Image 1: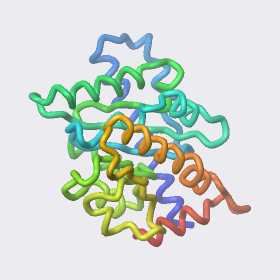
Image 2: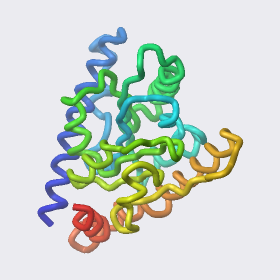
Image 3: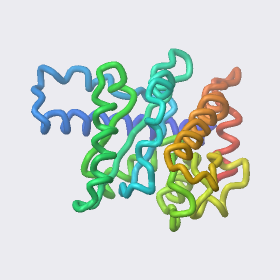
Image 4: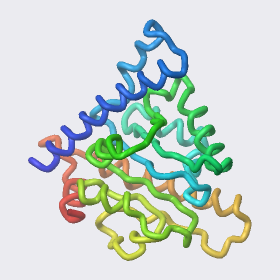
Length: 236
């Protein structure tokens, strides 16, 4: 369909931009041109692309995706149904907790076996955001409910044909209808924050493995993921 072709073309544009920014970031961190051949293979235009981009106060839980790093690594490197993850954001200069979360993501994304499937892009701004809204298939949001005031990044993703994968908080608590994306179950009432994060991270992994990835990679004889396209059309 024209809708799928458009989405695929925009994903390809995002991949090109990600490679450019990853290369520039590596140069700024002290790498030489001779060391950067690997950046030519960062991301794949045919792989399900998940985006997480916003300011980084601690309640937005940037690192929830890292609760079980080996389970995440398995999804990134799956030979049949892989996922690739682009993370971008800024923390307030005085927010040491937010800066620590970014450092955790950067350390994970720097590992040689996964650096072609997960990237952290510094200097998040409007010029970067447009590529992310255009090209990400899924927009991830996993704040600590009920602290999300609104969630405008998810709205912008939806308006560009992205599907939201989010905690039911802010706008998504009102917008989610069961057919326009996925709601991450929350462990409301669990007082222990570590236990709550463990439970909600497990629910996030489960949704990706059992619902999001199969819908994206389940193709008909025409090569199109019909159920995915239907969800995008319904969302729009």
